[in-house]
Length: 435
Ligand SMILES: Cc1cc2nc3c(=O)[nH]c(=O)nc-3n(C[C@H](O)[C@H](O)[C@H](O)COP(=O)(O)OP(=O)(O)OC[C@H]3O[C@@H](n4cnc5c(N)ncnc54)[C@H](O)[C@@H]3O)c2cc1C
Image (cartoon, rainbow, N blue to C red; front, side):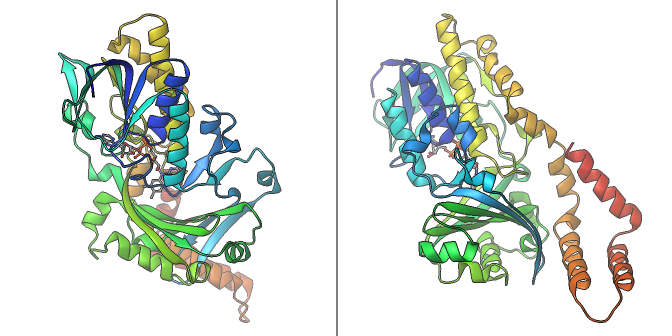
């Protein structure tokens, strides 16, 4: 490390940091990127679905050499009780025509690839180095201090892409401590299976892939979801719930126990049977939504990606929000430098304006009331999945009972758990919180 000054320092080499560093380096700015992992991706966890559009905006021809597993042609959503599920499946040949809309990826490989593009664009990357704190001159961030001897480096702007813990911004007092009600704790495994077995089990061929999103009793009434994704020669299975719910869960179920339970579900077990577990990891996800987004800029600093809480939990999107925020932060610094401006809060506010105009903040705003509604309504994760599954069983079982009586029984079972006002109220709450 030297006392050399950079146009920008980017802390972190996940999707948001790579997007920011790439955008700025490509425009000719002098960029230093610092990553604590052994290599980019070594510490990162994701499902992982890559949504093409956000990356296309940064590297339009990414499909030529990015490590992509399968393009998704089918989306399934299952509402589960202990024995069964009621699901919707959407499969379209339109998703089978390039350019594909989304892919499964393995983050360790993808982040490495993205980082190689960042370095090709001209940024300097230093790995195995942790930024310990921000250097301040009054209120203005002027650089970072790293865990290396003589590790002080200076820049006009520091882009904080250090992920969900957002340690640096917290330490500097830019925002408060992590609230357990605003983060989910997710665990996932990668299970290896032969390619042809995956293709048979999921009714797919070659590079086609399937996504299954899971909700219901599997989270034991906690606000959370599960997922099962097809990679080329492996499956990713995981489950995550709000950290505050894990803490308050009277059953004291540990996250990995929840995952074990999910893997044993009679509808899941046959799909993953024989899978050899090669990777297990746990990670936090910022799911506080719009109301948990901290201040995003200040003199000499910008916050991007998970560090800014940009995750759309309803649609399970995170990396695309991270990349978009990284790109917009990069464009802001480029505009500031081009205009010969100081990195003051007034000039860096452009980033916030760009974010407000983007799908990122618009989507988070749309669902801003949802976290509160779900937290106060455990029936969405307990009673309703059970009732819906029981209703399906009653309706589809042929047993000599006439259909009118079956309908009455179904209605009765709903009314026995929720009053009519409760049912209508729940529907209204969800509708209002998703407008
Ligand atoms: C289980 C799980 C499943 C998910 N599934 C999906 C999905 O399918 N699709 C999707 O779009 N999103 C998904 N997400 C969300 C997605 O992973 C994140 O939104 C995304 O990774 C955020 O990118 P980021 O660059 O902001 O942060 P990260 O990817 O967390 O990267 C932060 C980087 O900063 C580094 N770092 C941290 N502190 C320091 C420091 N002090 N000094 C130096 N380096 C530092 C870290 O090592 C890391 O490399 C999932 C998340 C989880 C946990």
